[in-house]
Image 1 (cartoon, helix red, strand yellow):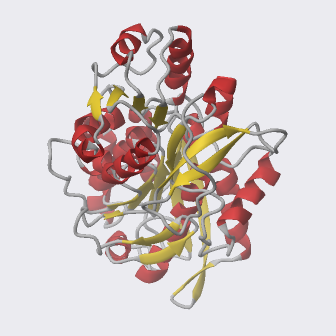
Image 2 (cartoon, rainbow, N blue to C red):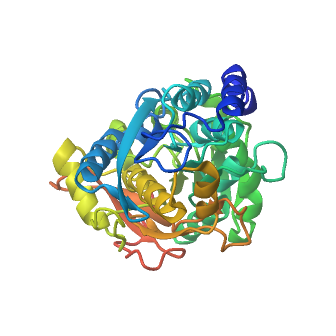
Length: 427
């Protein structure tokens, strides 16, 4: 797989040449593009509708439809004028190269003013690369800030047009350590880390970040996404009471079923990425009971949309009623992407990319995923805004609305999110 910096380089060069001739990308006075005075704001959304990362984009179509309907009835008020909002969504197909290509297409062919994206570093990093190359504002989420910001070496990238909101590895490590502390264990953990940007970042940072927990992490080596036989990992994990990792959903389904077959039974398992989604948990059946994961967003959180006025619970209810599916964590963050975009453009007063990025650099907005503010936290790069994080366990329901409920069991970093149960050991 090519690195994000090499993706669609030819398209980027062409776009820059066009910009040099025209003075802006796609700019005209009737809408779309980067010139000021437009009456239409055009937003490009790089989604993950298909492929291995499709659960991250499961709610995106619902949110895009919701936002199109909302803005049709509620034009965006900018500088005392009503602006139309156009949203163009394209599928990255869970592929990094494709993510960069569709971002370039949104810039070159569709003349978007802003690009938004979510769904792991594999997607948001190449999208950001294209926006940086073409001087287009980019707003991203659903990736820990480290693999988004630190792409080459140990120093954060120098990003000008990309703004990201999410939590960091230091936060998820603290939540996981809190969960471990509530289950008696032998202080030994197995690390299930894939050879992708998330796995590389988690495996490199978690041992130090959780050192004070008293749990030592054994990483038998990074595995390739799509692995079908986890016998080597399971052999290394035998006797370790704690399991952690950040696999993609289908890989954890394979791993956990093999773990049961081969007799590996940790007392607590905290798994990022794979256990975020009801569909992935249901694919495991009863053996998913009491598996734990981070909780970035939940309907019980006391947050409200700055656009629609919906509470987190009302947004989740609307999603379940509209789709017939259980709410899923990326729902709130997909919605928040449009809250941030609207607030930034209103603050900027134009679609000029320099104005929008300047507005983002000090933007503060209360969203359905919590308060988001850039430029106020010296512990992260200036283009990163951190969001609240809790921890939860999936629990089998007895005749409930859904086969499993995600129960919040740790709120050490988000005390405003109510705890709904105690941490329980795995059966």
